[in-house]
Amino acid sequence: MILPFGSFIFTTPLLNKAKIPAFIVSYLMENPWMTLGLGCFYLLAGYLGIRLISLLPLMIVDRLPWKTAVTRSWQQTRHHLWRYLWTMIVTLFMIFLIVTTIYTLIYVAQLQFDKTSFAMAAATVNLFIMEAITEIIICYTTAIFMMLIIVCYRQDFTLLRQQPQYFNEAPRLRKLTRASVAIGLLLATSLLVAVNLVYLNGLVITKPIMISHRGVDNGNGVQNTIPALIKTSKEHPDYVEMDIQVTKDHQFVVMHDPTLKALAGVKKKPSQLTLKQLEKITVRENGYQAKIPSFDAYLKAAHKHHQKLLVEIKTSSAYTAADTKRFIDRYGVTLLAHHDQVHTLSFKVMRDLKRLDQKQFVSYILPYNLTFPHTVANGYTMEVTTLNDQFVDKADRNHKTVYAWDIDNTDQMDQMMFMGVTGVVTDNLTEMQQEVKSNTDHPSYAKLLLTFMNELSLTSNE
Figure 1 (cartoon, rainbow, N blue to C red):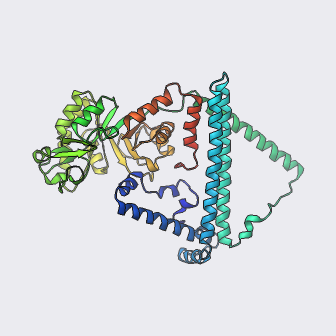
Figure 2: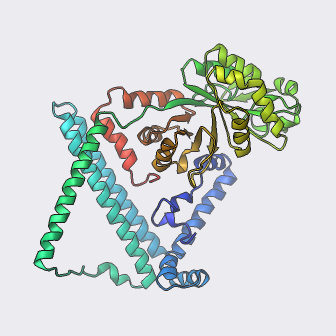
Figure 3: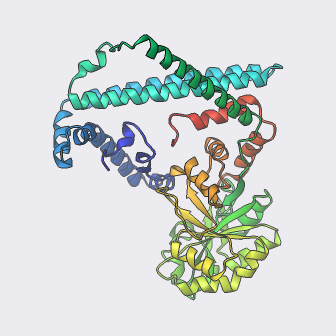
């Protein structure tokens, strides 16, 4: 990385890749010592980010080798750490305060306009104002932080207080410039208003497929068990996502975790026990308990209740290529007949599944969005932290589906609908179903503005 931990100063699509995925953060937060370690990591990252703030201009402008640039930046920031930090905190707080105030005023105003006969016209104007102000703030904020980097590089704090310089233009050139800017703004405004009208008429937000993560909804049972599957199926998700692993005798058991310790208190891996041994074990979670099911029993229960499945094949040291062939031979026809789907984190397993059965729908799980992969997979199951609309657009152009996981709050749900993902994997099925209904079943203009605010938010992934 040219600018270490650059997202602490400003963000770009490249530097935004330097993120810890949300599912890893959630896992670390479950353990107090890991939480402390994560906090220390962020503090260290912030400290290094400030101490190396002038690294980029030293390498580009002064053309210094990176080692020399690191040393120089470290020396320049030695006695100014708290000053830089305070400047950043105050700037970010002011931005947050301004954006929050403006968005709140627009939203409250639209709530009142929705009660009138000109609600549509008011929403169009309010949405345009929101977009214009947001762009101005983004540009202004970027300029402020770039100035801060230059100040750190030049070691001249008077730059922030200098008067702006003015340049004289020839009268003819001034008229041409103003005319060009006016025409450009008129065209851009017309296009933006047209797009806003399309959005306000409900033609932009998509209705994604709803997928219940591990077969539960808001802790209504033990994950990956048949009682939870039956209970969740009554809420009519499009798919129930569940996990399978191979056993010691190379059968398939329904289990997510690599060990049985968390749910059963047994210090064994599924691959160290036979299927019959596993089926006798009771797992407990969320105040419920149930037996570990075989994939055959789980699949039979799903089909009995007319519930389609999204089957995740998890691999381990015991998993072999023969297990992939065994899976297709045993379940391929049944999965196709009931329109079930498969996804996996293993590229080899995904490739082998498509080679063995081209008709099978197989999605490739990606925990990180570095670049768009061109594979034989039918789609991609992407962790939400680094998922963006560029990835979704490219997937659409390549006729690939995109499932986003885990989507567990309404703000994320709004963003995914705006982004146009094919489906969402969620632990809070009922709440997300209600949010989809709220966004698509004749939503108020104020609600549409609120959804758009989530997309425009300066603190979003974009």
